[in-house]
Amino acid sequence: MIIKRNKFIISAGIVLSFFAVAVVSNYYSLDNTKRTCVENNKTPEVEQGLLGINWTVSCE
Image 1 (tube, rainbow, N blue to C red):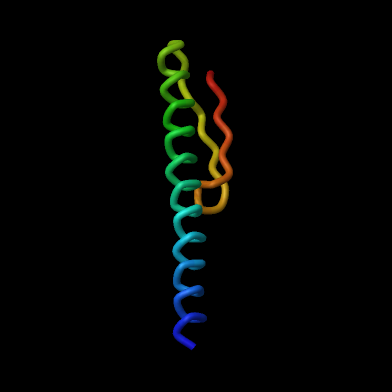
Image 2 (spheres, rainbow, N blue to C red; image 1 turned 90 degrees about the vertical axis):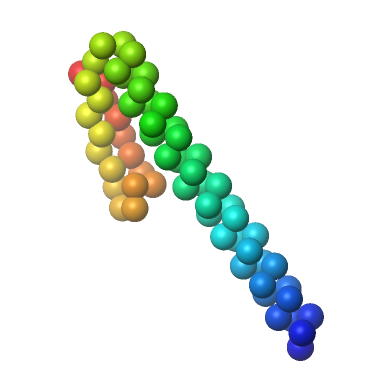
């Protein structure tokens, strides 16, 4: 029983780690895209979907 519990905890930790990496990577990608617009003397227009995972940036 303890082995099943340990496997569950390890599996949950791995899934949460992947989710955390995806969120952090998404945040830095969005930040980099907005910064690139500003560097090109344009204004970033950001549209975000649910939870900020789906986003679109247009430079105007």
